[in-house]
Length: 109
Length: 88
Image (cartoon, rainbow over all chains, first blue to last red; front, side):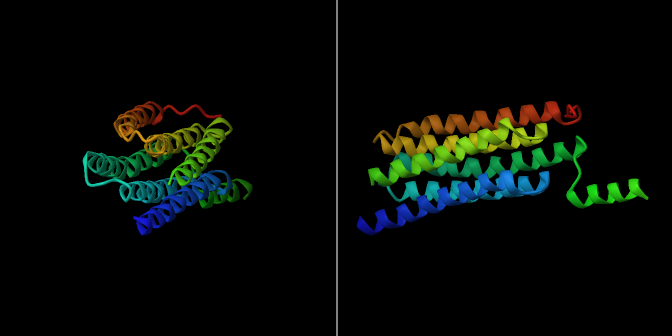
């Protein structure tokens, strides 16, 4: 059990590390679509790592099934909502960084 | 293992507060929705880890329900703002 504890601690701490890096990326990245990239990718990997870290702590019972259900559901819904967010931002008129630069250059010429 | 769970809970709380600060101070409405989305996902993980911290893994049911509601709410808000975004 000791080795399992160490492995699951490493997985949990790695998950929190990726979550923190995603949260910093929300503030630091220059463009809306790059921010979507940072948030969605780190959300997925943080969910995988934390749920697997908790899975190693359960005996094989109903809680294992619940954790696997949460993981499956997050793996389906998190990319879906990120895609819906990027699509609706695109329809709402947000531009990428290079497109904004081109627009500014056209306006100055 | 309890100390590890407590540390993980505090770390997830820090991530949640940063995401909420982003949702409060973002330039566009889509950035706010992005922050709220991240907050919701981290809340699911926080409830799961918190259940293990308190020795009551039954909290996983609440985490499942929160994940469902988070997704439905996100899609509903995005459908609302898809073509009628308020330009700030």
